[in-house]
Image 1 (tube, protein in one colour):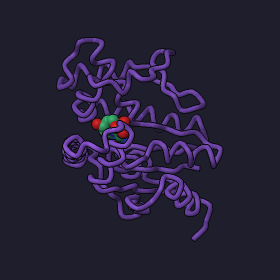
Image 2 (spheres, protein in one colour; image 1 turned 120 degrees about the vertical axis):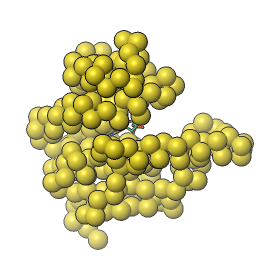
Image 3 (tube, rainbow, N blue to C red; image 1 turned 45 degrees about the vertical axis):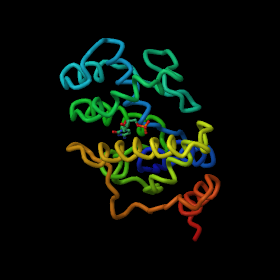
Length: 217
Ligand code: DC
C-alpha cells in the first residue's frame, strides 16, 4: 500500500498523512523533514546552502532514519524541534533546490518504501517524481489566506491582521519557490485526487482520503 500526497506548505499534509497512515496501519514518510535535516547539517557544517557540491556531499553522507512514530533521526539521534528552527527554515528551500541533493533524498525515500512495505509519503514531488505509480495519489490544496489563518491560529495571533497578512505573504513566497524551481517543482499531476481543504476540518480531510483509499464514494 503506497499513498502519495503533495501540496503546498501549510495545507495540512503532515497531520493528514500521519493520521491516514495510522488508520491504515502503515508508516508515515515526512519528506520535508528529510530536506530540513540536510539543511540542518549544512548549517552545522557552516557550508553554503547555495553550494550544490557541498550540500550534495552532506546529503549523500547523512544517515537519516525514521522511528515507528515517523520521527526523524540523524546519525541515530532524534532531530526533533531543531528541524523547525528559523535558521533551517531560512535555508531549506535553497538546499532542496539542488538536483544532486534531491537525487540522494529520492533514493533514500524509495529505499524506505521498499523496506517498509507500505507507507503514506508526503512532500512536493511524491506524486510526480518519487512514486508516480503509487496506489493512491492526492493533492491537498488550500488558499494562501486560509493557510495564513490556520498558521496564525497556531501562533495565537489571529487577532492581529497585520501579522496574518505578513504570514500570508511568506506563504506565497514559499509557494513561488516550490512551484517555480527547475528541478521537481510542486505540480498537480492529472491523476492525483484534488482535495480543496479550505472549507474542510482536518478530520473531514482525513475521512475524504480514507474513503477514496478504502473504495468509498
Ligand atoms: O513540507 P516542509 O515545509 O517541511 O518542507 C521543507 C522544505 O523542503 C520546503 O522548502 C519544500 C522542500 N521539500 C521538497 O522540496 N520536496 C519534498 N518532497 C518535501 C519538501
